Image 1 (cartoon, helix red, strand yellow):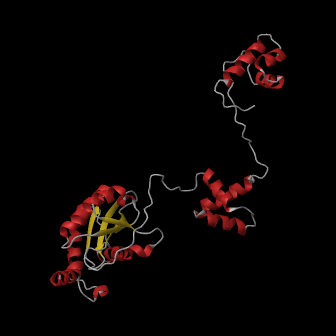
Image 2 (image 1 turned 180 degrees about the vertical axis):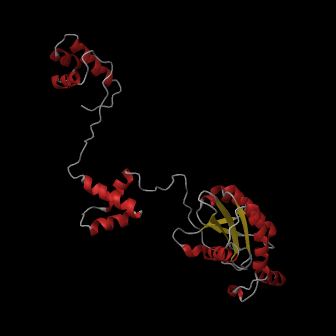
Image 3 (image 1 turned 60 degrees about the horizontal axis):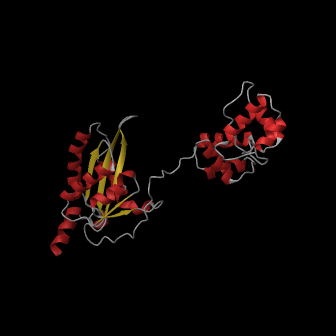
Amino acid sequence: MYTINPQMPKLRAKAVNMVLSGKSVSSVARYFGYSKGAVSKWVKKSPSGGVNYIPTESSRPHHHPKELSEETVDKIIEYKKKYNRCSEVIHQHLKNDGIDISLNSVKRKLDYAGLIKKRSPWKKIYKAIDRPEALKPGDLVMVDTIHLMVSKRKRIYVYTLIDVYSRWCYALATEKISAGKSVQFLKKAQALADFKFNCIQSDNGSEFSQYFSKRIKILHRHSRVRKPNDNSYVERFNRTLQEECLRIVPTNVKIFNRTLPVYLNYYNSERLHMGINFQTPNQLINCFQAIG
């Protein structure tokens, strides 16, 4: 009999000790109000010297009549380790092998085996606000990070920023990234820019978390999940930066940050951009300020 009574383990032990002391199973069963069969089972599970505690065992069955065979479970885990793909792909491989199994069963077995990467309960998904139109410098500024592998164990991170209207850019290398460092990067970029940032857009990376949103005191928009075009401007700048400036990655961040300003000055002042009618970002900013 299954019970959640916390005193039941001690009661069983007391009943067993009474039987071991010479009393009959029937009299003990009548005394405690349980069947003789229950008392007999308690006695069989106990050592001959007596006990002080007989724990309550779970009533959960060990097997299910429709449970998956060990061969099928092994096949699920084998495909997961071989292809390292999502549950849907593993499910299709099993169907191709003629194994009739539901997708939920595949997910459940992979979960039991610890082979599913779960989303952190602490990470908040932000609902993206409407994307503002870039009608003047600062209306929409995109930020991102580039991860560069210097060695098997060492990385260098590059914060990047681009103003969508003017294509004005800024970048800074660092050894570590965090929400705090993202705030510092944005402050440095704002100090160098000749216009005010009105809206910042980033992806959902941890370096652009809620802490970042609160500290910058600027409207912060997160790009939509699985919508890569939302960050197309900054992603294109990241590619250009890597192709034209970061072909050889310095192992020292200080050397890196001495090289970046030279390239950024060229990018903002000399490099002609087809997207803004073959002007430079600084020309477009100066033109807008002259008109305004």
